[in-house]
Picture 1 (cartoon, rainbow over the protein chains, first blue to last red):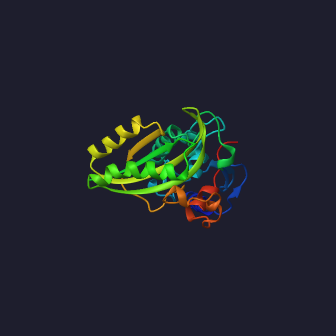
Picture 2 (picture 1 turned 120 degrees about the vertical axis):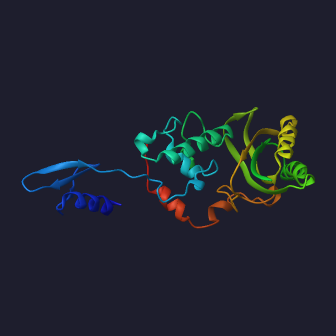
Picture 3 (picture 1 turned 90 degrees about the vertical axis):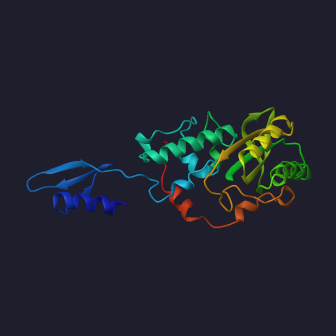
Amino acid sequence: MLQNKNNNNNNNFNNNNNTENEEGFVKVSLVNQSVFIRKKKTCPLRDIDISEIDYKNLKLLNKFISERGKIIPSRITNVEIKKQRAIAQAIKRARNLALISPIKKDATSN
Amino acid sequence: MSLYETVFIARQDLTAEDVDALSNKLAKIITDANGKVEKEYWGLRNLSYKVKKNSRGHYILLKINSEYPVVAELKRVMGFNEDVIRSATFLVEAHKDESYMFQSANAKDYKAGKIATRKEPSKLDLVIDQFQFDA
């Protein structure tokens, strides 16, 4: 995962002194200066087929709800939009079936 | 013919035989109308909130291949059966062989704790373990 991001930056800037400093940023050394560039974040579910996102897969859904039982926005999780919609629908179905609490995260289901 | 999934929760004080009788009765509605149905029993699970004064419930999944009017009849019958405390029906594109919560086909075959030793983590589980969002 990390290699891919470094490779992308290498392609853009033609050098290979990239180092990890802060989370989410990559330090890139140019000729006379070094700059910090925000890493492009990728969808954490890119290897998972959309049919796996299901109201029955509680282990997956519990990753996408907060301690208060709210659905975490894709702004934070970087899930792509189609999969975020599928997650939201699956969580709502699971709530109706009393599989997920609407007000808190179930500590045991992780 | 379309594919449907129906999940219903049976009352907590039913015995395994009662649950099987109930699910067979509901499945018979589908099979009488030339539909196909498969059953999955998920065990006596804790509900995450109380439903009609029950804090636990038997979960049963019916995987249905049938016309919609038959499914509508199934929903109607579940609506006035007092042993069914909650039910939901979804249109799906494909049925999976075993869902993530599969325990046994019939309630009387169910043994508690069986799921812990059932199988090693799948590729999906390994991907899921990698990320964590809430602090």
